[in-house]
Image 1 (cartoon, rainbow, N blue to C red):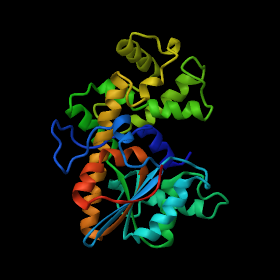
Image 2 (cartoon, one colour):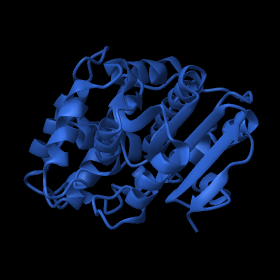
Image 3 (cartoon, helix red, strand yellow):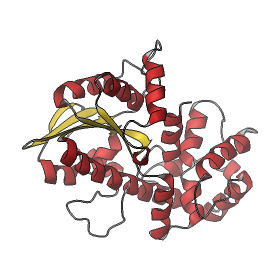
Image 4 (cartoon, rainbow, N blue to C red):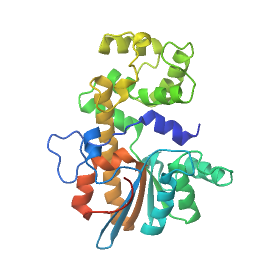
Length: 301
């Protein structure tokens, strides 16, 4: 697994960014819901091209895939032609790594030389094209500690903030066949591998043990993890419960960071391309339209 795909899993199937605000201003993202995404004029994968005066933003709202024939990859290629970007922002990489984040560049170059350049997903595929065209490349993510601190500042319990973030990796592990569920003998080992990795640098330090996780799940749901057939349902963004609430807050934190970064790069580079999962454009649709006007849409349904 690449470092990028590992981070995407840690961030979960649905992402979040920014401050929690009761009455968002035109410069703030909103909280994600499936109903919010359904109100988009088209559904991902699609390319939205925003343009006002000398500023141009292309936003590829992707469906995550590692299949080179998937429409997301054609939209990424189309976006480079349509936008002619001077700066590119991709998902799953911390902005703090700076322009041309070294681990991503190394991995993208390795994939360029492989028989399957799309095999790590659309973010690294986008990085390959940015390298070919010598276009400034940035990650769009806040640091893990910043997300964690923002959740705690918003009133989240540290256990809720940490353990909720691990359902994405666990879902990925089940999808890839590493575990079948929480009653799998491999589960505790896989969980602790993800948890120790995710806990690095977090303060206050969370308990990465499977025992503590199972105890937390029982406390929060009243159910034994191994006996709950719906243990992953709480990762759904509209499912009630502590996991869903934390994931929505986390996504809002991430998306506010991304929106602020987009504004900054438009100021410095004028033409910007963003490649992110489709849920992220839903949370910032209104502020983007407020700033840049209605976009031209390519693809989608």
